[in-house]
Image 1: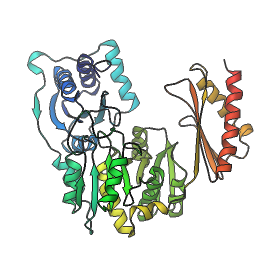
Image 2: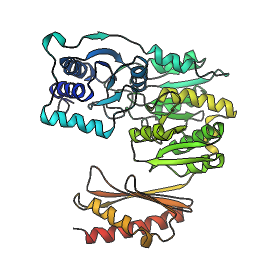
Image 3: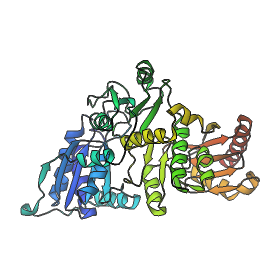
Length: 440
């Protein structure tokens, strides 16, 4: 922060967004990062300079911003956050009037405006107005009026000093839960733990869940669009397994349907939903791709193993707080605790390897493997090319992708046994190394 994303650039981004969208009304919120107020002021300056009236909601979770954007009939919603990234970073997420994250096409149009300094500045008498208004009760009410719990759950809530610090405990208390809140003070330095909830950063809260004899724990990322679940035994639920288990619950209640996940998620999701007549659609990694596919295919649920779950009956933004409430409802309906629900999901062996390959050659290597997939993997069942190449077999799969940031080709393998996974990986490594040697 203050290196790449400066106030000057942020103001120009605001003007570029206004120019691209033609918006007249915008909703703006931010997470707890210390750079948030500075960047908010700059962003609002850019928006109002182009005649946009701006409503600022202050510190709020991303899903609340997205939901309220649609409910308040705003033309656009903008969230200032770096999500799960370290505190020195910040960024901007953009949502359309339906609460959908901006597509790649729309983002590219904004970048073109920035590149060519194309801004539709308003005359002095037509610049936008700014007001500060907290309308998150619309979001809270939507959850508390839709989810009814019959049990008084004891839950530990860990916002990690992030944007869910107020709303998450409040909503769960309204639903009748006994809430033990930790790290629930807003602090943009994130002193308690990393904004990314993972096994390393959640060791302390996991112990608390066990020591206070809570039923379950919820840990959110910096802006609240992700959640990680902790069982009463103080162990983190396997993210792939709980995603698959909840998908199975949803498809059972819907007698089928489409579930959307990304190409890196475990095949246990197919194992859990296909018995209910459901199908799995896989997209590129990234929640915007899931959101677009869920809406286009009228899917019943979608999610990524990172804890970003999308519930289309509410909205198309990943939502950690909503996922927490709906999971409690699912556990009640199934008469299970989190440990039991996860235990119902099969687990498989996962292997990962990276092979050095120049940035100029890595995409060509992946392309040549795709063109030769029948020779390399003669027993394959399905091939997906939505993000690299994902080759599925009867007992496993391999994903081969060119790294987006490093001179590497990345291989991910999952198999029903370690032996199967190793055999698939061996064939994948051999093919990549073969083509790396040919492509210079």
